[in-house]
Image 1 (cartoon, rainbow, N blue to C red):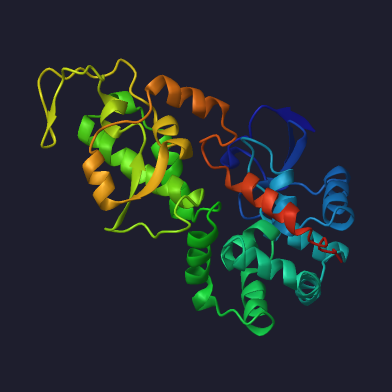
Image 2 (image 1 turned 60 degrees about the vertical axis):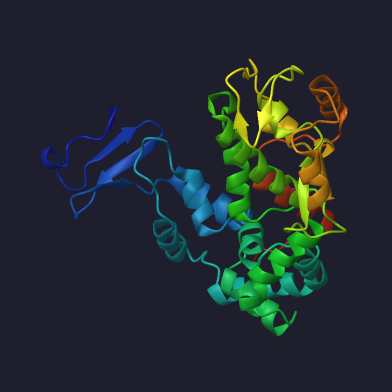
Length: 319
């Protein structure tokens, strides 16, 4: 068998030709394309992954696909399993999932009502067919799919901690900004919006709902996060005087929007305070450095893993 560094041109090879590329044997089929040849070694790998380790078809295909090589599809793995008599019944798989859901009903309900996870998020995290999980929520938990997102949104407002997918994207986007490249108005806007996310995630407004009556206030103000704090410089009616000097390093969002720098106050108090600060920048940095909460990009997979570990789910049994 000829060893090659890349697959030959299909126009210059005959049907049935086999070549060895890396660790994988490829054969030219009647459709004129190259495809992987079912060798004993590959067949053994499929059996180990699908039958012994309980991986699903897509997981097997993804594991066996090699970088820069033609991808292996789950339908090709399904064909192999059917030929070998290994294929797990689709209905059996659903039955197994329903059994898993039944044994973990209370934990799943807690995941939705306590942690605010939607049906779609749970389906992805648990590798459960979304239709099966949605039907289970309706028939067994009494939670209609149409209420799933609104329920999760209200729970997140109440409990915080877990952000919705759009909120996660916004969170990470704000933290990726280079604030030194922003104008003062752009910096103000970014700080205000990111502070709202921090207040939501860390439940800073447990007693008051943020509104026209209650504001998120910064102990070190947005103004002094961007400009130096010399006492002879002025800030009048929102216009920055020419004498203002921008900080050599503008306070990053993870510092000025940290929970230790935020508080919920009534609108009158916030307006009277204006741009004044009650902390020095040096003191704020020290508080942030020593605080247990660290403002970092959100890792959804890590968060889901932490939540699922708290729920102590009984593992899904494979056929």
